[in-house]
Length: 351
Image (cartoon, rainbow, N blue to C red; front, side):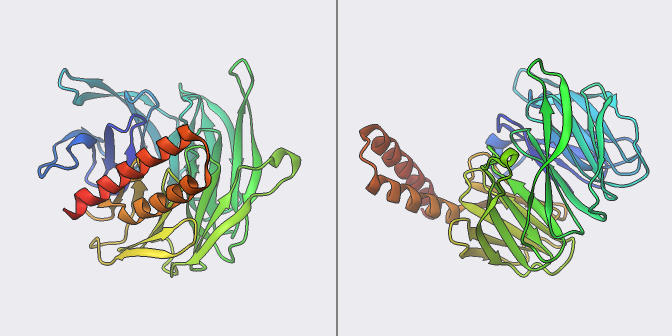
């Protein structure tokens, strides 16, 4: 399998594979022994990337051979299962280069693709080109949409990550694609990157063998630059076979190097857990679920779902520290409930 994507409501997971299939899974079945899926066939080709539309009724796939994007419309059956996939739109091919990143903005306003030679393109929802730019990072290793839909993050041969802002007018018309800021500090090419849902924190992993976490909640229009919060060694000298995921709650950084997974505290940089030989081939994709309680990885024919117990412990500690400092009764009660819920989740796994 090559890529994974959660629907915005967290109810569905999509995976794509070189066997010309996209599989749709219901996340409520994750805890069951048997996992059923709905198959979407990609005719005469296979998808290297997959992402959900904001309304969860369509899938965007990046086609390997054709080097272009395609949209499949889905309908929901009475039992809640998605099916009856129909090709709704095929985008015009921009060039003959492989695509290393694609996605639909969570705002539903545009679609992004980026080639391995650094051609970044924005489309409207009908396939028309809104803007195009050369990232000047070729070979390009990764391009990601921020979960908030406001930014595009690109990483490649250069040691700096470029963060692009996609701006719209107050009336909803596309305005421009422009450079917002850069994530600096690595000494070699950046292999992968990730952001929290609000884009206030972004993480990177590099060929220099380290990952870095940045505070990106800055007034970049006034010239303020992101601040480094945490950095740690992770031994990622294996080239492009390295993936990274930042948990939505910002507490955990996961690095997948070769077939191994490492979980770090985003606050301290401490290595909290490691799983070796998880897959029979290098990890191709990893991501946290919307609750940050599960980490999903793939790299062969299987998807592994790991309990993010280390991340739960980090969150419990953070909440307990806040609880000791706050004097607000409402906040105290909310923090107590959150701690109790996380402790119950961890306890259920140990029992």
